[in-house]
Amino acid sequence: MLSYTNKADIKNFSIDQIKKWLENRGFQAYRAGQIFNHIYLHQVDDFNNMTDISKELRSLLAQHYTISRLGKTKILFSKDGSQKYVFKLTDGNLIETVLIPEKKHATLCISSQVGCALDCQFCQTAQSGFIRNLTSGEIIAQVRDIRKEVDNPQRLTNIVLMGMGEPLANYQNVVKALNTLTDRHFGLQFASRRITLSTAGIVPKLMLLGHDTTVNLAISLNATDDNTRSRLMPINRKYPLRELLNACRRYPLKPRQRITIEYVLIKGINASEADAHRLARLLRPLKVKINLIPYNEHDKSDFQRPESAAIQAFRDILVNHHYTVIVRHSKGRDISAACGQLRAQLL
Image (cartoon, rainbow, N blue to C red; front, side, top):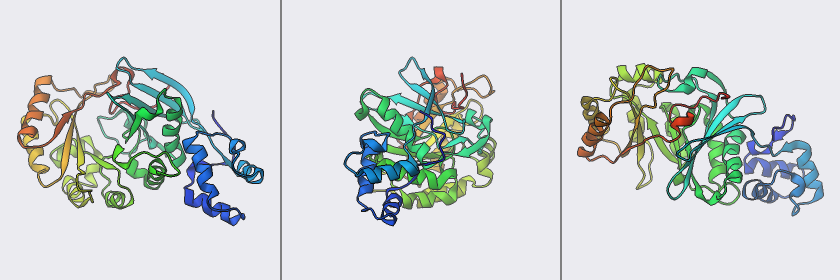
């Protein structure tokens, strides 16, 4: 339910911030853990239902904070089982979140911004332009709300920040949200290894991310030379391939961790066998695995998906160079929920 109150959403605050707030008002800091357990583990939406804390504290919390839910405007159902949620924020803006069923678990693709400023030519989100960053509470709410709604919350184990927006352009809010999502004691208790953040490559933020979190990193690369990448992704003019790949080389990884390279295959642009050989050489010094994503066509773009034979040939070249390669056939294409299709329009 939407809330238009001037009170602060408590999900926008870290547990340390709430501890300090409590101590400043004469309450014991450990109460913050109880409050967060109610919000994130027990899905409590009303402070009055937190009966293991005093009425005085419950009343004080209710005077200053809300525990809000996103406004659920529409749910679209794909024939492959994916579900796209269109959420309305308290200011009326819309975002999209996609629930993707897998064989043994489910993955949630969440947004970090309303719109996006990067103007990647293959992505529909760019057509709406950038409106604003999501708060940490709005990022968290996508996960919290859908976890409450699904029939088997335990199946929802994986999160990808691959929805609307560039996560590293909303760095502080994204990292704060990740801390709550991965808090094993007082948060949503997701394993860091089950969370992947995808970025177009804001180089100065990459090194910060590697020190501030241990989630998985995915780089949206999509080209093997600067001219092509700059055409597809204007961010490359500021942070060209050499600079981006040098940052990837320095990125701190755990022993068995690898960076995921995402490569959208577009016919006649970046999907030739020569491109595949260049990509193999370009990535040679890095600890990576490669996701090939055949372009998801839509009526507002002239780009085309390569033929199946070309996709297979591209993959085979990389495999012959001893890379781990997966061809990602995006789910939810029939409801515009696939990679690059999120735009948050009321349909």
